[in-house]
Image 1 (spheres, rainbow, N blue to C red):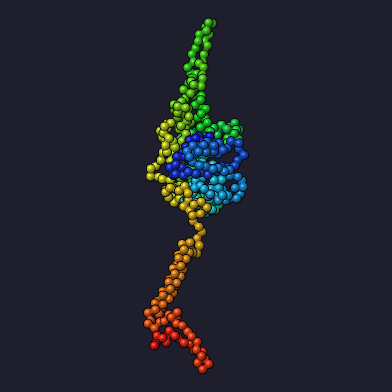
Image 2 (image 1 turned 180 degrees about the horizontal axis):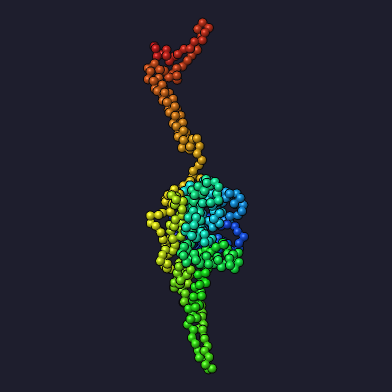
Length: 407
């Protein structure tokens, strides 16, 4: 089983480097009682919480797979997270990423981190197709599907244990498989081959027995009264046992087993792989912990200073914690024939034209009244008094004011 604390620390440092503060964790629903993802979830979530990184988790069920992961992406991921952490089978993950591409999530604003926890002899060989091109399905009859998968996998980061690639490991794996076949125990091989999990367990057993051998080699012979030799083995307590294996390096299956002062194995590191857009193959980019292995060395190790993580199309710029358009495209409304700013310009223009018309009418009225006031013969209405006279039976007005002024 991978060291969940180490893998969690790697992911935390990666999140802190890119300033991501919220992660969605997805794992596969499986009938196995101790599935790798379920075991990893709790310690990784604890590591997140202790480093102020919020997380949420959800099981992927058969209904999600039948629904082509629409609910996963639309209802779960797109609401409030740009980063999602996946712990599922390779087949399920490939189907999910193809669905993400179809739903428009492969746009440079979302990143998918895949925990490759189930490591077998096939996918721990750097020369195998499963390691170099996990997006490729040789049984796929439609080439366009593989091309879409390759495009979608540009947004994926693979987290794997440091691979066992030495000849010593290959011989060990082949011997175990051959022994299982000779003794009709192939059903007991979980993945029908040997991976890093089984090798790590074997190394732990080897370390234990080497310590026992070292301890009991210090036996001494006591001469009894009847001249019989009696072998006496010194007692072994936990403190003595720990002192024999802590802060030591012991030869293992693939490489030396390095233990720190509390007897934790620190040489089992993890590596982040990123897809090269040019050749479609995964490349190791970041490792943790950095070599040389020690309890104090807890930094990321960039394996190639000139090789950055490409999220899509060789774009190495940081993906923001919040998408450019916000979650659910709130900040990017749907395009219409006339955008919002167009309506604003039209409204302002209409108001300006209306104000110009009203201003012109008021100006003409004021100008007309000014011209009337400038005329000398203009008489105010209140200066006139009328008196009706009858002249030949016809009423005619009499302008007293005007008559008196004429006199």
